[in-house]
Length: 281
Image (cartoon, rainbow, N blue to C red):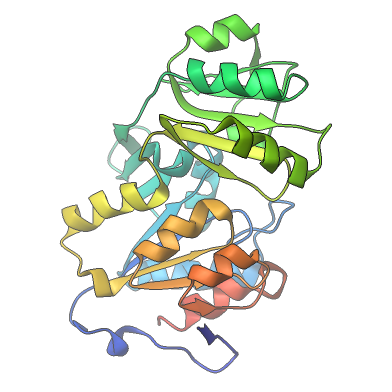
């Protein structure tokens, strides 16, 4: 594993096929923005410069669509692709479209089995679900910035009957370790899930991750695997960092994320993403 420093880092010339564009996948929370949602001027300018350089830069986030669009705008990304909902939704960006984007893929699933199992084990947790129309249904008026829209309070049965793109579970009554143990005990099947920094769980359709969506885009673009780069910090980035030809973890990432990375940059508080991005110019 390589530790990135302020010394210029490897860029295009170190790629096996250096005439090809790079495909650069960037996580958002904990990577491009801090945990208060703030993007530093250094990260913004570095990201904008890499976008302007012509590489295939794309956001790959657990955030839902409407919470992803402001980040896309901040880094000046007008054309290309973005992955939302941990791979559940893929966008094609095009300024000639009325909204500036179109959804080209959406992976849905039946949330009922997972929700029933979780509810039995975690009865006091808060539950939210993004349906196939982009609405967020929630218990207890559960709201989070990653939803991008105001959640709609519903009863649990309504959530069971919905078709989901993303399910979020949060428990304020359990420690992170207790929450993880409960999930391991349940043994969720038929879905893909990742546990966040706190007692937070993101659930997507089976087999759907950031990496699965990015691989589809890689093939579409015809990019060599060696020319793929990913930067992230969370457990939901593990598959993406493993998939990338060059997987770079943020300095504050948990041990299991650091373990799969090829390189480690500085933390989000020290503009680690800007360090990586400047090295691509």
